[in-house]
Length: 210
Length: 234
Image (cartoon, each protein chain N blue to C red):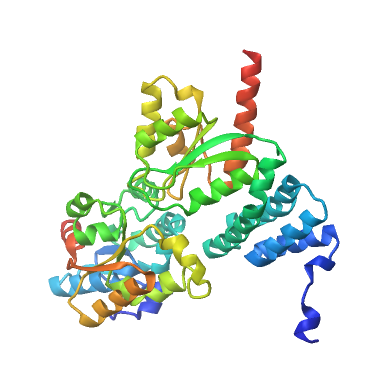
């Protein structure tokens, strides 16, 4: 399966091929990582369908979008696995998945499962703002333009006034992405830390589910 | 038509036109224009409380409704709030001097582990606009901070806010502490934040979940009035 552009993943997501026994229904922000895991593990029985990653900025819309996609696609597969964590839905997504009888990833969000759920919880970094590889590449879309800071720089302290550092949770070793994340930290006026995570608990959750 | 001819001179508008224009300026987040409008109305002899409720809160209510209906988004609401804050900055000292009506007192803060205060700030501002005295505890409040504040401030309302799924359960810690100390029913407890819902509010023992600042104000007014009525009856 070919990886769409980051902009396509942000706005439209990724449409499943319809081949395979197991469907992974994921956030578009995880498409590259999940496709890499499918390829690396030879999971030819796994298909991937992604919802638009921009839902990250509108968590209230996530549960309904997942419910709709599961209902529409589940008959074509033996099993559906939802590759979302809670993602700001306040437990609604977990409840919906339980009601639909499908599994999902544990934990509060992708930052936690990339870092490792237990490790992330133990850090208790309440003043940290996180970026992943995808969000670093899409920083302008999700943060700078998405929050209107490009048009209204005076909003910056309202959004980020209490944060102290930007933590780049790196899924890959890519110096260009590290530089981009560092630049994002500079623009937000935050200290910078790079933390290599690889695929973290995303890999273990998928291995267990499929 | 030249740009100069298009420009609206606020001081040349009559009162009704000026208030309408201030609604538009608030909607567009124009802080300087809002401050100018407030000053003009003051010069014309308007009471600070009337300016606050008719021009600023009236305008912010439109903003809040359009946010609820998905017409406006967070950046626009923040800009409008920033403009209202400019107007409030002028009016606040005058409201105290002129003995404006007081609806009640609220202690508010985001819960322990949560630094996201955009929603909390909007609620605090709209509550002030509605005539409540607001004691803002800021962010990341442990149960001790809430307890100390309610002891020293004696509020009618305790407001708690959280943006994170991981921090919202802490609200129950605070409510349970109020119960343990036998003072739960002395306060109206309102909770809010993006991942919360009514069911959660009920489950933790809050009096109400408020989905936005406008709902918080209406709920607070209703519950304070009910509390006072109960006080008279008993």
